[in-house]
Amino acid sequence: MTIRTRFCITAAALLLAGCAAQPAPRAGTATPGRIPPQDFAPGVTGEETTPTGIVLTNDPSAPADTPLCGHAAREANALGATVHPDITPLVSPCAANACFDAQTGTYIADDGSRRVCR
Image (cartoon, rainbow, N blue to C red; front, side, top):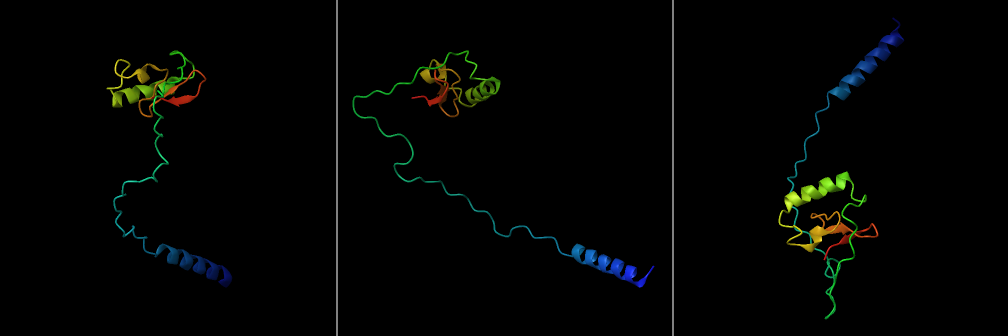
């Protein structure tokens, strides 16, 4: 071996040894605090109240056997029915709509779009 080869090997070994000798980084020392409840600016969430004398009704629902409600949506809705067992067609007319999702309170209207059940 030449002196140059020995020097390169020694330099590479020292460089790798220096990299390996660094201490492991410490975990974050700050303890995570509780996240406060989120507040929204007044008037930007929720629905406005309806004028006196006007009754809101749901748009027509798609047929119950619509292909728009696929297998995954039916499974999600079954899970929602497990989480919210009190929402049944006998108690809430919303549950009788096509693909009613108890988690979000939406159903599939006859035009194929999701609508909020009122």
